[in-house]
Image (cartoon, rainbow, N blue to C red; front, side, top):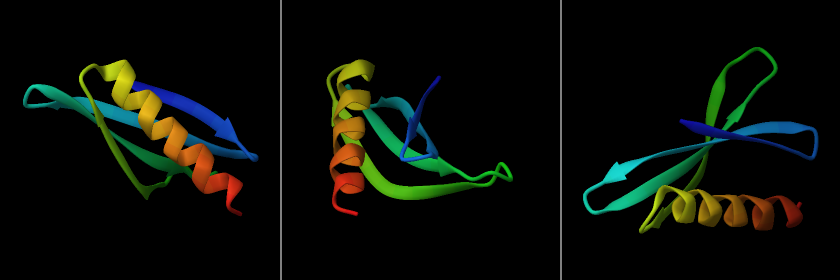
Amino acid sequence: MAKQLELKERRFWILSEPHGNIWKASVVEVKADGAQESVGIDATGETRGAADDAAERKLRRLLQAY
């Protein structure tokens, strides 16, 4: 399952999957033509929600820097 975000007129997906005893989430940007590009953000957490939230926080901080 993916969580979709629209920030600064751009669309991102947070993709999460189990990784041993924890969850790992990564962020990809979805371009207008449907192509996906990794943003380079990864986060982990004890639950899927925790990993997703950590990845979203990192993404929001990154976008504020621009």
